[in-house]
Image 1 (cartoon, one colour):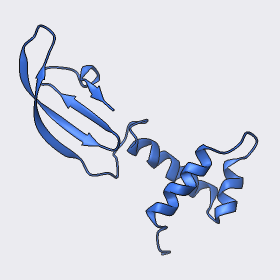
Image 2 (cartoon, rainbow, N blue to C red):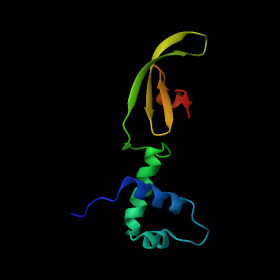
Image 3 (cartoon, one colour):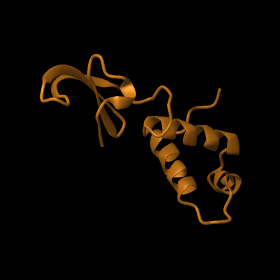
Length: 104
């Protein structure tokens, strides 16, 4: 089995693919870096998940913290803050996840 590409390389290739000029295909970007187009597509999908742009399980480690959250009506409750990628989400018991405050 081949050795995985370094994370810095994968991140750079994904950045180039996302910021490519009009008319430049993913296949061309992949060829320029010597990777298979499907590999680049998978890296982009994983990056979207890690950045919180698409649902899925992130590769980044989660960190959980207990926080006090003031909810509508002025009441303060204990919640859980999950930190991952570039976004912080505060979960309050009894609130649907979609209604929880998001910072980032």
